[in-house]
Length: 240
Image 1 (cartoon, rainbow, N blue to C red):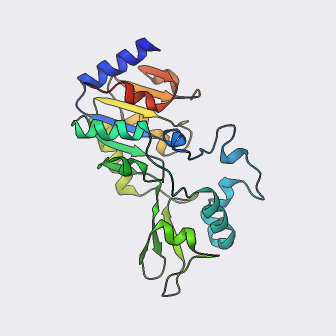
Image 2 (cartoon, one colour; image 1 turned 45 degrees about the vertical axis):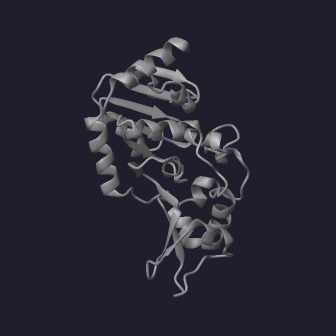
C-alpha cells in the first residue's frame, strides 16, 4: 500500500490537469450512508425498495410517502466535509484539480471549498416550486410536513435527479469535456454501476487512471493504479 501511495503522490505532483470523479464512498466518512454497502439503504427494510421510492413515478403517484422517506434518509444537515473533500479543495487551490465531478447530492465538495463542482445528480440544497420556480433551501424541506408547498400553492421539488429522469445535458457535456482534457483521472468511492455516469470513464485517454474504492468494481482492470481503501488516502498524498 505504501508503494501505491508513493506513486499516487508522484502522479499528483507531476499532473496539472487532474479531474476527480466520485460517488457515495466519498461522503460515507461524513456519516452519510451509501446505497449498496452491507448497511446501505438497499439493505434496509422498507415497504418499497429505495430505488422505487426515489423514482419519478413514485414521486408523482405517492408524493407524501416520497417526502417521508426523503426527509428521513436523504437529508443530513449536520454532515461536514471529510479529509477527502478537503484534499480535493486543496488540489484545486494549488491549480492542479480542474474539476470535481460527483454523483453525490450533499453539497460537501462546495462546503470544503471546491469551486468547480459538476453535480451529475443535483443537490438536496436546492429545491424549487414546480409552479412558480421560487427557491427553497434544505431547511425548509426538512421542517415542512407532508408534501412541502410554496406560498403560491405549488409543490416544492428537490433539485435532484430521480430514477427515470435524465441527467442535465449541460452538466454531463461539461463533465465529458473535462475528462477528455485531463492528464490524470482519479475515480473514488463509486461502484461504477450507475449509468450514464459510470460511462464517463470511457472519455479518459491518458495513462494515469487511478481507481480508489473499498470494494471491487467491474472497472478495476482498467485502472493504471488501483487502491482498495478509503478516498481519504488523497489527504496523505498531497504535494508539499
